[in-house]
Image (cartoon, rainbow over the protein chains, first blue to last red):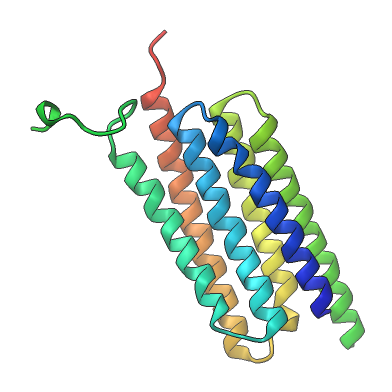
Length: 93
Length: 97
């Protein structure tokens, strides 16, 4: 059972890494953020698999952290100005 | 009983891996930003939920199982919210044609 979980985690790692190609290709900033979201979900699933397989409960906290960081990243993107990388000073109220 | 639970775990985790594969393929192959968002958010969260369900019978005590469920709930809520935010951002940021 432990071996199966590690194999599943490895396959999941490969799939998540393949999804990161979308972050490279773009084209829109939303596409790149989607790849980051995939990293959050997939990384969380990998952490949970490894936590259960190895019996180290603390690895599950990594999944919590990744899920939280992915959510914060999406919120930070939506707060930014669309189409610009940095808000210019004269746009601010 | 233990073998039955192991079989359940293998089935659920394999189904979860399949849905993660579907999500990655959709993210890479779909033509549009919103369709890619659709593929990513649905398929990946289904895969995550299936993997958590598969891991539940293998968790050593009740505390770890409850923690798995809590992480699953957090991921569901966070992903639903962030997918809405990303969709709004993609519509706002689209070039006016």
